[in-house]
Length: 89
Image (cartoon, rainbow, N blue to C red; front, side):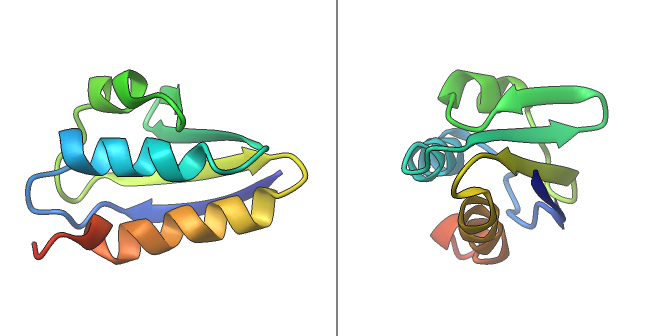
């Protein structure tokens, strides 16, 4: 298991576009990947699961992966968060 804690920096939070990008990226990996905010945990490969979290800007989340490519998965997803999913704000 490999984990990293990050802060969501997108001004609009985790809305449809970043949720889709996150799920698409997570689906590239064989590991099981989850996103946890407070007590709510979802499959990072599920767009609907991600959108039900309704994460606003500033939310602290834990990304966890378990599997053969867990470290690469977490690092790649962490890069998405740091890059604000390619959005300007």
